[in-house]
Length: 244
Image (cartoon, rainbow, N blue to C red; front, side, top):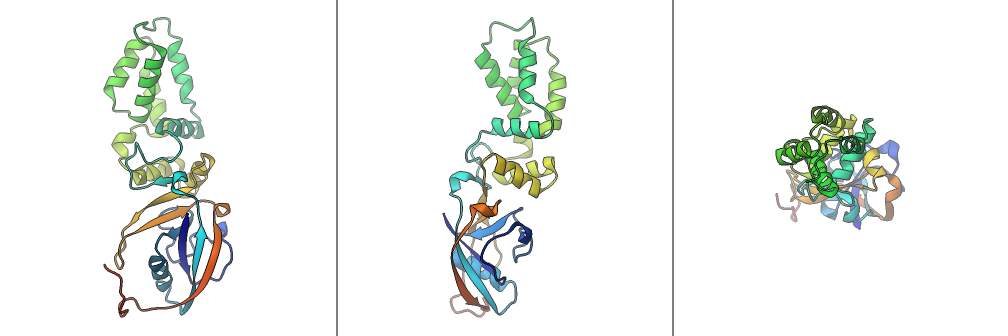
């Protein structure tokens, strides 16, 4: 995917130690900021107040590898289910969620009226939606002797399990993970390990029309294709001023 980056800094490759040093100040999270619109990239250069700068054209990961900040939580992840994300987040916090399911399945009083597949389905539903009372009730019927209150406690500590209550969009989910892990840099590393290479979404700008903004987590996922010299341009006086 082709994207653009406007800057007054003279460089020929993106480096991690330069994150938070640009005009956008990585305001959409830890990583390298790009836009799909050349004019928006030039706008960010103009924000620097410098006379000279560069418009960088780059190849970045396709959207199938990016977390969609604007999409619903059910559809925002590119290549991993919300349940698998919860498993990984739990393990990151020292809790192996599958162990709870295995422990409940060992209950001698497990109901034969529920298949293992049905129980697993309800388990996954409850992991990703802690307010799903139907799923919890079926789990209790399936394994009545198991202490599901203990599971709820560990689940909350491990993943902040009420995704549906705390999150409605990909942006909410990203913020939620950041809170769980203690910052956007750790979130970028965590998501990178899951082959999620960045985020994208519609950015609301005050001076120019909305544009798709992309944040790429790792420098190895960015290839500079072209770099053009640009000059400071007063956007307010421009005859071709972009729409608000």
